[in-house]
Image (cartoon, rainbow, N blue to C red; front, side, top):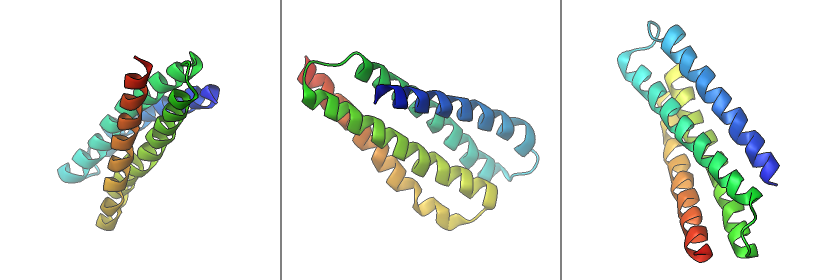
Length: 128
């Protein structure tokens, strides 16, 4: 399972770099400053959480002794992936389309990020 999340984190990091470059070069003159800021927020959170997913995948690969910690790490990884899609994905879509209703999805992704960090915290505390 950790190999899947390692691959997902690598793909996500690749996409964050590509989408960040696209925004900096192709969208700078095409989007309003407000929508460009939304796009930049999507890229920023995309990067942070691609790295977080990478860290969780590495922890999974180094198998903590308890099955509970493994379950918490898996939940964290799934939630990071869901957050990436829902949070950053909705902001990318909002910035590129201008459809404001897409912003209603963003908080769900934010909650996924929070839950992922909480699972990682609990796994760390239980492993200590």
